[in-house]
Length: 211
Image (spheres, rainbow, N blue to C red):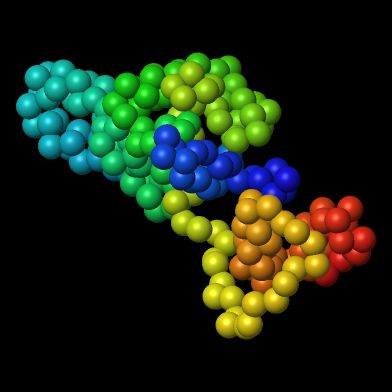
């Protein structure tokens, strides 16, 4: 339930380690794309100015460079580092669906499918796909098995006060202990309404409601 409320996604490694992922929505991804677009336009403008002195040869070279920058920029950045400069600036990263590094094949597939995501105008298919997918993935991400996530931890983990151990009124399982500790660590970073919403999930056991 916590994952549904806070848009978290938890994946498990083969070793059984839980990796919490925070999917990125359409707005931060759009801002990152805008930053990358500005970088590419500036780069093409500088290269175009340098190549124009070569005349027709320069025009031919510029067309080749424009193709490489248009397609190679995102593929190389995401395949090598998992993020373009725009994504880094916005605190985003592209990973595989299981939380592993993206890889070159997935980077090529997700970026080539931008041609479909951009149809019919203004990334309409990509936007609709991200709105209807619970993890905000566009069509290219769904096909490539990738996920854009926030790299920072939006919920700071607070240090719990040092107090003596006390017996619980109800026997709890291991994962239930972990849920209580996670709630205690995050409670101060949540609004009162959200704290009550989460605390009320335990009402069938505690017979109480609210904080």
